[in-house]
Image 1 (cartoon, rainbow, N blue to C red):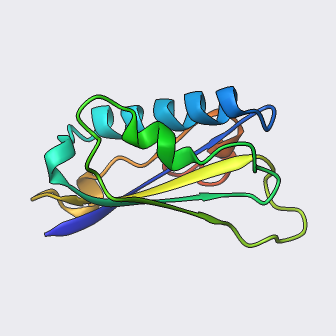
Image 2: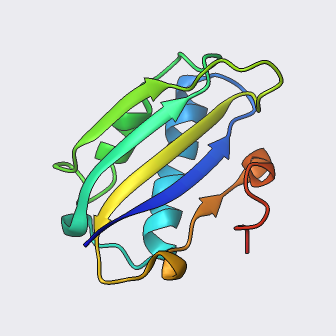
Length: 120
Protein backbone atom coordinates (compact mmCIF):
# COMPACT_ATOMS: atom_id res chain seq x y z
CA UNK A 1 0.00 0.00 0.00
CA UNK A 2 1.26 3.48 -0.80
CA UNK A 3 0.29 6.27 1.58
CA UNK A 4 0.97 9.99 1.46
CA UNK A 5 2.66 11.79 4.32
CA UNK A 6 2.15 15.56 4.29
CA UNK A 7 4.42 18.14 5.79
CA UNK A 8 4.99 21.88 5.62
CA UNK A 9 7.44 24.37 7.06
CA UNK A 10 8.06 28.09 6.65
CA UNK A 11 11.33 29.96 6.30
CA UNK A 12 12.00 33.47 7.57
CA UNK A 13 13.97 34.44 4.46
CA UNK A 14 14.49 33.14 0.95
CA UNK A 15 18.14 32.19 1.29
CA UNK A 16 19.89 29.12 -0.08
CA UNK A 17 21.07 28.09 3.40
CA UNK A 18 17.70 28.44 5.14
CA UNK A 19 15.68 26.76 2.38
CA UNK A 20 18.00 23.74 2.36
CA UNK A 21 18.29 23.54 6.15
CA UNK A 22 14.55 23.79 6.83
CA UNK A 23 13.60 21.41 4.00
CA UNK A 24 15.98 18.76 5.37
CA UNK A 25 14.64 19.38 8.88
CA UNK A 26 11.07 18.80 7.71
CA UNK A 27 11.87 15.64 5.71
CA UNK A 28 13.83 14.14 8.62
CA UNK A 29 11.03 14.90 11.08
CA UNK A 30 8.43 13.35 8.76
CA UNK A 31 10.60 10.21 8.50
CA UNK A 32 11.25 10.08 12.25
CA UNK A 33 7.60 10.55 13.24
CA UNK A 34 6.46 7.81 10.86
CA UNK A 35 9.44 5.44 11.24
CA UNK A 36 10.19 5.72 7.50
CA UNK A 37 13.18 3.98 5.98
CA UNK A 38 14.41 5.68 2.77
CA UNK A 39 14.01 2.39 0.87
CA UNK A 40 10.25 2.54 1.50
CA UNK A 41 9.86 6.01 -0.06
CA UNK A 42 8.32 5.82 -3.53
CA UNK A 43 8.71 9.55 -4.23
CA UNK A 44 8.65 13.04 -2.76
CA UNK A 45 6.95 16.05 -4.31
CA UNK A 46 8.02 19.41 -2.94
CA UNK A 47 6.20 22.65 -3.58
CA UNK A 48 7.19 26.14 -2.52
CA UNK A 49 5.31 29.37 -2.52
CA UNK A 50 6.40 31.61 -5.38
CA UNK A 51 8.41 33.84 -3.02
CA UNK A 52 11.01 31.05 -2.65
CA UNK A 53 13.49 30.85 -5.51
CA UNK A 54 16.98 30.80 -3.95
CA UNK A 55 17.45 27.01 -3.96
CA UNK A 56 15.97 23.72 -5.11
CA UNK A 57 14.57 22.11 -1.93
CA UNK A 58 14.97 18.69 -3.60
CA UNK A 59 18.71 19.11 -3.17
CA UNK A 60 18.22 19.10 0.60
CA UNK A 61 16.21 15.87 0.52
CA UNK A 62 18.72 14.08 -1.70
CA UNK A 63 21.55 15.17 0.61
CA UNK A 64 20.11 13.33 3.63
CA UNK A 65 22.18 10.24 4.37
CA UNK A 66 20.62 7.22 2.63
CA UNK A 67 18.22 9.32 0.52
CA UNK A 68 20.40 9.78 -2.59
CA UNK A 69 18.18 7.65 -4.83
CA UNK A 70 14.79 8.82 -3.57
CA UNK A 71 12.89 10.35 -6.54
CA UNK A 72 12.23 14.01 -5.72
CA UNK A 73 10.58 16.76 -7.75
CA UNK A 74 10.00 20.47 -7.04
CA UNK A 75 7.19 22.73 -8.17
CA UNK A 76 5.53 25.99 -7.12
CA UNK A 77 2.31 26.30 -5.16
CA UNK A 78 -0.59 28.27 -6.57
CA UNK A 79 -0.19 32.00 -5.89
CA UNK A 80 -3.42 32.59 -3.97
CA UNK A 81 -3.93 36.04 -2.38
CA UNK A 82 -3.61 35.90 1.41
CA UNK A 83 -1.91 32.47 1.43
CA UNK A 84 0.87 31.65 3.87
CA UNK A 85 4.17 33.09 2.64
CA UNK A 86 7.62 31.48 2.37
CA UNK A 87 6.19 27.98 2.77
CA UNK A 88 7.72 24.68 1.69
CA UNK A 89 5.36 21.70 1.44
CA UNK A 90 6.33 18.03 1.09
CA UNK A 91 4.18 15.12 -0.03
CA UNK A 92 6.08 11.91 0.66
CA UNK A 93 4.67 8.71 -0.90
CA UNK A 94 5.67 5.70 1.19
CA UNK A 95 5.14 1.96 1.01
CA UNK A 96 3.56 1.02 4.34
CA UNK A 97 1.01 -1.12 6.10
CA UNK A 98 -0.12 1.84 8.23
CA UNK A 99 -3.68 3.10 7.93
CA UNK A 100 -4.41 6.69 6.91
CA UNK A 101 -5.26 7.45 10.54
CA UNK A 102 -1.87 6.16 11.74
CA UNK A 103 0.12 8.50 9.48
CA UNK A 104 1.56 11.52 11.31
CA UNK A 105 1.59 14.64 9.15
CA UNK A 106 4.14 17.26 10.21
CA UNK A 107 3.69 21.04 10.24
CA UNK A 108 6.51 23.22 11.59
CA UNK A 109 7.11 26.93 12.22
CA UNK A 110 4.29 29.12 10.88
CA UNK A 111 2.96 26.22 8.79
CA UNK A 112 1.16 24.87 11.87
CA UNK A 113 -1.69 27.20 10.91
CA UNK A 114 -2.29 25.20 7.70
CA UNK A 115 -3.59 22.14 9.56
CA UNK A 116 -3.90 22.85 13.30
CA UNK A 117 -6.13 19.79 13.56
CA UNK A 118 -3.16 17.55 12.67
CA UNK A 119 -0.47 19.23 14.80
CA UNK A 120 0.47 17.23 17.88
